[in-house]
Length: 147
Image (cartoon, rainbow, N blue to C red):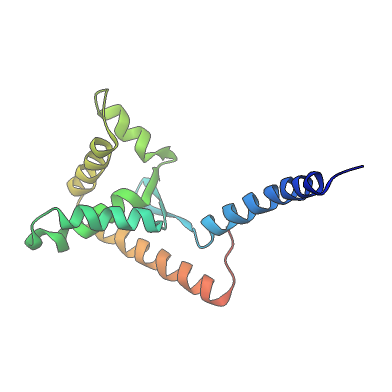
């Protein structure tokens, strides 16, 4: 005969999988990826998490106020771009860095790469990113989010 604690344990373990799935769904709710092709390059952009947005704001606050506005675009794009021509942006940058390197080194190098692009390219990518964010917000408001 099963005791009350045995039953509670089996109920808890059966719900654990449901809870994990629900948390996973919640974390990815509103996440949207989008591919943008410019000439022979295809960039895959993603919406950012609250943690990624927080990191950008923290980094912006460390630089002089006069430079903050101009850095928002490159910092956002260096976080939003996940692939270029189906290659991981992080992996591409890691090959350019000498080991050992930190996450900060990776972030800085990605930002330097974005800053070295032509402004017409970064303008187009940022415009697409802003559109992506607006579409994600609209989808959530209408209840049509598809992960």
